[in-house]
Length: 461
Image (cartoon, rainbow, N blue to C red; front, side, top):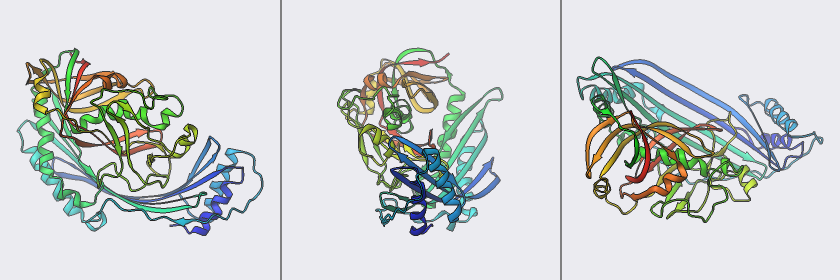
């Protein structure tokens, strides 16, 4: 996208105020989206996002600037302004960097590029999901769908001689079913996605997800209000892992740890969770929503064991915070686009499968809550305190899942919930989400098997 000669010249300008590291990130992204309500297409949009980000380090200090122009003059001007922000100009220098191209293994084969698939075929898939969702029950008042695919090409070059490129293609469908009895409404949501092209639908059945969204909506329409209090709670696999992601995962990112803004800072080798808990962040998993070949600093992604049998084994570390911590990078640096400086973020983060049978987990609860599907929530990354909505929940009585309840929320602290996980199932699944943080919104997977939390505060009515 930009020649090595120009990249070398721009890096030289970036270092004129005494910086000891400079990096250029070039992005060219094509995106398509289609929105549908009640079976009718509302709009179909295409776009292109191009830009260049320039980052400079000077010790522990960092400056980031970007432009959406790629002329030599614009790139040098952006680098110059960034260098000025970092310190006094020392005069021109000639840095002859030997940029060596590094080609990484592609773990994510793509069969059908989004640009080669017509909108007609994409709409046909959406209509299948709509028909299944709408036909589930006459109580389904509305079905809203969206489809999106992105094709992102990036180039990364830095003053250490790295020159590498990557292509990232993702596809996702979002289904929202609304059930109504004429007085009140309840919503069910499903949003499958993959690091794939249109071949995602070789693995994802749109009708299944349409039915699942409507099933949740109609079930919750007839559910009673959830009681409140401290309870034993079983949290289902898949998107149930959002609690670990938010309440614990962010606290294991170097973004928080390096500054001491994490309850887990300085605790490597210590027990921070039940011995039942092993937690992993793995960006190499083929074609998963949060996967990458390389991170946004050009480092290959890898399988990072965060917690092993309750013991804290590692953090997710980017280049700048790795400097601050005196630790090596882990392929965990990510950003939404060229408009953001990268920092340590999650990819596919999950609690690994355990040895407890699902039936035994439910049977062990004399009185409690079964959280079948989790919704959104909020968390304080410094303290780990969280509050998450339960999208679909059921009371458990004498080891049997009984009537559905709505309005439930799970309230607690990440460090405490880790210690209170006393049973972990065998069937680990993952769900898709978008994670927001200082480097923007990025695709991430969350996952776990069915787990039992011995005690947690349940908010209700």
